Image (cartoon, rainbow, N blue to C red; front, side, top):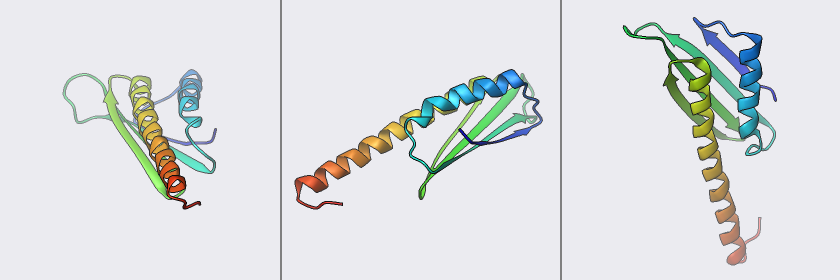
Length: 111
């Protein structure tokens, strides 16, 4: 799977990038090619306590963009939460598309 990964104020190891690949594989079954995934992992330096990592994931498929943004104490936790949110959004979009198709066929309009 191809994706663009941008990090700001963070260093990722090879093990981290492998885990990112595994996490993104969970949403691949909901996507139809061609699609583009953009990931931004950023260490927020504006917080006084603890380490706050923000993760933004944009999935572009056709003319639609699905966006998820989460904050957590680690990069992989933030990415995992983003992937879960994307899974829910992609499931919802797929169900809506199936419902629309079924209603159109019910009324005799075919695509």
